[in-house]
Length: 206
Image (cartoon, rainbow, N blue to C red; front, side):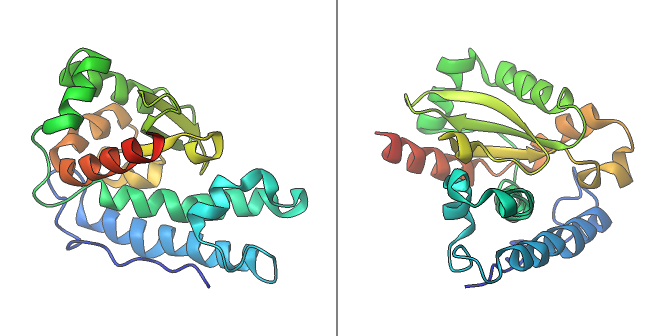
């Protein structure tokens, strides 16, 4: 079962309040597609070539060491980007509601403080990587950051939310101003999708 590039769930210009149309085109059609192609090449003729990206990432320690690095990098690139596009939408922004809002407030004191800490996690990630909101094994929310295409699932954490801080995610509009990109990104955040992931993680962790 070869990995595939999911279609963008909205128009290329749908995120203009935070991310320009050209960046979305390049990021999805070229960068994301390249990870799909390279992942399938890395998985070809291995015992993992019929597994989903998530199953591979969750069991990365079981992948043979001689092929683990290209699989980690490229399958991670596929899954991380799949989630990234789901984090945003043309009607994004605003604030979370319900149990997600309550959990964020109880863990991080306020939504504004959560945003500040999340942005800091992305701004201080050296080089390329990602900043995540995750649920740990105790059912608590945490902010973590990972380098390159690493994924918190490898460490037994459940991803709830993610932002991409590779330069290709923001450079055309923001150049080297990563903190500005991180702050503006909240204009397009799809809280409904994030709330659904929070509920699913909560059910899984128990």
